[in-house]
Amino acid sequence: MKSRLFIYLSGHIFTAPVSQLVMKAKISLIVSIAIFMATAVKATTADDLNLSVTIITGEHSRDSSSITTSLTLSTDTLLYEQSYHGTHSGRHEPVKKQYRLTNADKTELIALLNEKGLWVTKTISKPPQEKGTSFYFELEMRANLKGKQSLISIEGSRSNSHLQEDATYRSVVSVIDVIYRVIARKDPDITRPELIR
Image (tube, rainbow, N blue to C red; front, side, top):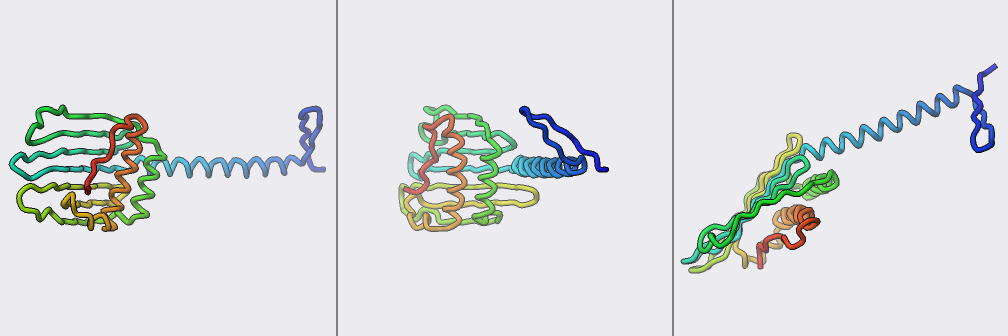
């Protein structure tokens, strides 16, 4: 005769073979472990992402000046730094702020890097051709994740609207926009530098 287990719940008695209940418990445990491991692997993968972006916007003229903005992601921290150089730079104090990165933020960035095919080494150089005063930008993105690496450098004129059609340029800017959304949660007044105008 098979053993049966009686359970009293809310005024009712439920009964089932012990072997059946044990099997259900094993299945439930296996599912729970699988979910836990998947979550842990996802979090670990996100934690392994290192990403940095440097943006320089400036002017070549008798009064040359530039602004350098650095964004550095590591583990659960985003470091934002901005400094001024050249003419009248003494009027601006350097800025340095930290923001908290969530696993969702890092997972979104990893998905974007994968989707846009940004694990490459690439340089795009289209400097200003204007004589006299000219306005330029320089952009560099570095990333690494479990052996995958990205190094993309772009320089160009801030009046070069054709560069906005370049797929790599648009993809890198989309990554930067995600980073600035993290900043906006705490400092909505800090926005991405306008590269091409």
